[in-house]
Amino acid sequence: MSTNIITGYTGERHITPAMDAAIFRAVFGNDSYILSEGDMLQGSMPDNNRFVVAGGIVSMQGHQIQVKQETLAVDTCASANKRIDLVVVRYTHDAASQVDAAELLLLKGSEVSSSNDPTEPAYNTGTIDEGATVVDMPLYRIDLAGASVEFTLVAPRIDVNLFEILIPDGAASHNAVYRGKFLGSEVTEEQFEEISSGRFHDLFIGDYWTINGFTWRIADFDYWYGMGDTACETHHAVIVPDEILYSGQMNTSNVTTGGYYGSAMYKTGLNSAKTTINSAFGSAHVLKHRDLLTNAVTNGYASAGAWYDSTVELMTEEMVYGSIEFKNITNGTAIPYSYTIGQSQLKLFQYDHSRICNRSHWWLRDVVSAAYFARVNSGGNATNDGASGTYGVRPAFGIC
Image (cartoon, rainbow, N blue to C red; front, top):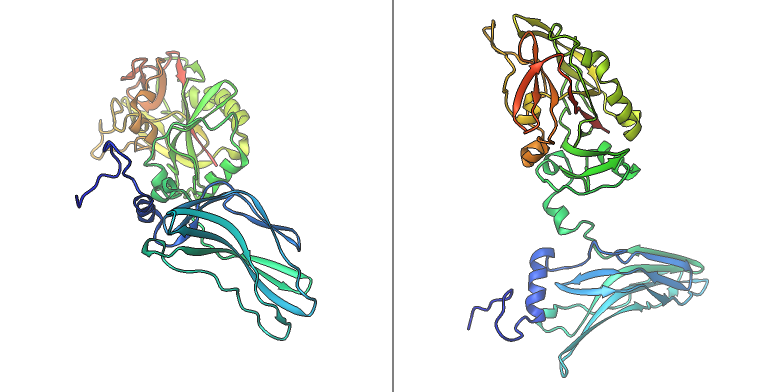
């Protein structure tokens, strides 16, 4: 048969090393590389007579070779001479037994006087799948000049795994992937560095920390980046707690006068949330940016807004549902105006609708009427209620 299945059951052993190597060449290419695994064959010299190679995996023309930590002896060089040695991984194939093998070797160069330039020792080249039986993959070059010894990595490294190749660092790509991984009981300095750099390496939508009894989940990356009357130029991850932090009123009576900015919730009701969030993440790591908030209500609709410094806020209907549900943006106006930059659905809620519903009632910041603000019902449906109602506080904020 000219066509053979590789990944499948045929009733007998049918996968050859050549097939396996062909697949890896399709992934990593035809050349030889140190792969992103283990200590990636990190080299070190504890003294001038020992070269230590840490463990790892190399892909030699598609053939995978595991290297365990090994110490190679390095001969000293005469004080007036120079020499170049090479550390290599050697592949061998025994034609008689058809057995393949690999080993780590140090190839010693020829010494020359210090007034001359030494050359690298010869090593074996060739293409394994075209019949080459001995092939060397140079890893390190060691330059010796009298008592001076220096080494240089010469093998190319693939510093990321296939997952990272397909999903590069940055907000755009990481906003496109939901993972939901537990990230620990605190945000590490390394994680803060990934956020502040805008790389977001190993951080994805739905990932979460459990801190001080609350689950804090990544809802979006760089949601407010570039926004504001003064542009936000700080990379950030938007965080939303899975649970309500506590319950409170938008106002002590059923009025929406002054909009969200004029509400008791904005003025004092979020103070406890800010304290909890600062304790969990550190106030220096809570994003400060400019946000557009409603500050006037006319005939039951938000009629004005302004830019304010912002850290921790209730969410908008659009941030949760991706659309306007009860917020009135046209009554009494010729041109709709929603007074917000929170106009797109957070990726957390876009990818996992179950995260909207946490079996609690919780407030949103949108003005619905002269007496009502928007909120999320315990069943997950959009609704609204009088401003004096006592419902959950579940804010969104950025960390950086």
